[in-house]
Image (cartoon, rainbow, N blue to C red):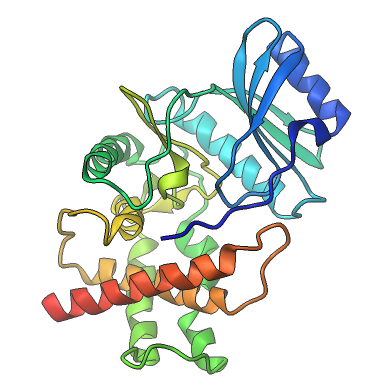
Length: 299
């Protein structure tokens, strides 16, 4: 499945005040900045090396690139600080926030992204690491994290909008039935107390020889412990053999809710700096729709 991507800003085009902060923090002049592609966020994502040989990974964005992304970065900062030092999460070195631009300096992880489509060995490693991480994050180390069922209620309730806007859907989709399924999933989602990543996909995971690292915690929140597993299964479906998820109406409803949010979103204009997100949403919506149909036929 194709991935959407934000528009990257080269390191040299960042405001001088932010680049000065980077060099003060790292203790030396930056001599190499390699822009990294992938991910939805606009702004800078670069692997840095200084004259002294120190390396770091920089993420930075300002409101001029996308007015909402700086707030997502602030959520990522809070979540990463709450998680602390774990092999499955990146170490955060320092934070910059002047009210307009937000920057984060992380450890530079020498690894690779899982290929897409997924391969079985990578999928097995990542699912095992996610299970280990979920054990640590349930209950959440950030108890006041946003409740995903509240924060994402509009997105998860989009079957009502699909109906109101009279959007075309596959012939076998009963929009009203899917809307009711989604409501079941949303109610279950609201009861969760684990800290969920909520945006797991191949380009938010780094594999090293001995680590699986889940990066880009820009959408964290409280959810059931199965939420991230469901999201990752959707990413992997069709590529590898996956363990069966429980026959649980809450999980089926959750999948249906995501399908509705993606289907309605795919019909909207693209937001600033994210030109490829709508085709990605439509493609991913179809994966979720087929998954709901499969679960309803088998259970």
